[in-house]
Length: 185
Image 1 (cartoon, rainbow, N blue to C red):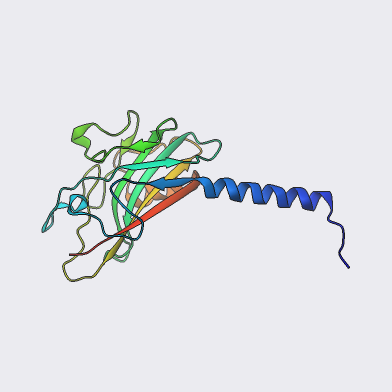
Image 2: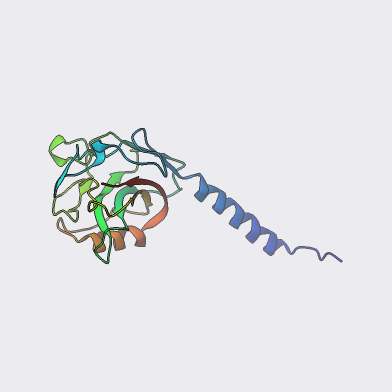
């Protein structure tokens, strides 16, 4: 025999389903990358034995969670043979009204990143984007490009580590979406 649902239980269920649906609507796309596909030479690093274009990919997002005050975009290789992965890019404090980054926005010398945002130092030691450069013969690495909706702008020192930046992003995240591309040499 079916038992009637209490109104408090029904309200909780509706809230859960609505918030799950809203969180699932936050999405990330790119004209330069496809999820699960190999990146182009344009996204390969220039240095460390690599000779690519070192261009950050174009990224766009929509379905922004309510209450978003800023965004962060990260690029991370969990397969780097370091024991802790490799931060290729951390761009924080992107204004809440910006929902796209052009190709090359990760090159701090081109001033294509949104005004007010901050390019953090990557694991190559430079501020901005550092492209893929897995060791030769190491197989395909995964490159996770993630947009994070933030509840507030992040107060970070200019030379914050990748770990500190990642911690602050995750501590203030309202939602995120990831495109995972591949690369091998």
